[in-house]
Image: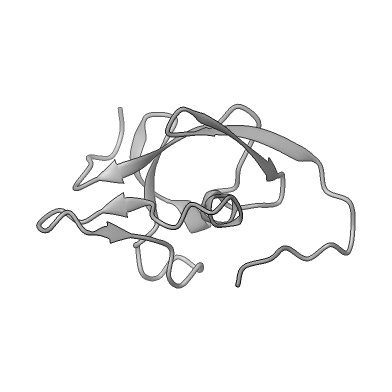
Length: 98
């Protein structure tokens, strides 16, 4: 199961995920913050609409695509959280940019 290392104190930040405030650690990636909050899916597939969630956590599989501050197809595992960030789960294909 996913858990954070607690070797040193890390500041909390608040992000919005699908409109709901979520407390994350400033060292978290978006995918790690979602996992830690019990959110297991980041997107749905284009064809079948099946839920997909982070798999590799290192930017290889692209199963963690989310919309960050209005920009689609961002890899949640490669995007660090920051105070006030707005994250949405991505349904199907999403164009890059606004």
